[in-house]
Amino acid sequence: MNPSRRAFFGFSRVDRSSLRPPWAVPEADFTAACTRCSDCVAACPTGLLVRGDGGYPQTDFTPGHAPDGCTFCGACRAACPSGALSAAIDPPWRRVAGFGDDCLASRGVVCRTCGERCPVDAIHFPPRLGGVARPLLDAAACNGCGACLADCPTRAIRIVADPAAAVSSGVAS
Image (cartoon, rainbow, N blue to C red):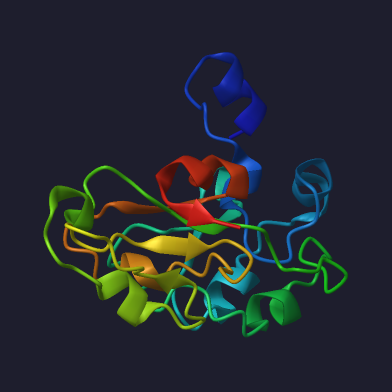
């Protein structure tokens, strides 16, 4: 199925480039180069990559789907025969975690599961006078791997492609 037709008829309002695997070349080049062979999907050890619309690979950050998120092992890039995933892309992507209003800490409940799960220690809980510590993301340290999503009891975390979009939800740069 041609993704541009879906967009024309209003079926797709998602920015496809935000769903692409790590090391994906720019979107127009990606869709031109990707053969939709699914070699990258098969190579992903965490199961984060899935076949998406039109057979193109995409990330699936559904909480609980890939509990380890992306480990940036490079298996997908190594398996890509077409060059749609390129070692020249550095960093592999620029995504960060964003915290929604459903976060337990914003409701006065002590919860630090996201910080405990973060492999790069990008989520901190600075003390708050007279209240529960809320998560604060160091956007420079966050690699957008998605590991913090797995154990969030309210599914209040999302991975956003634009670090500026997460600023409104407790992000420090």
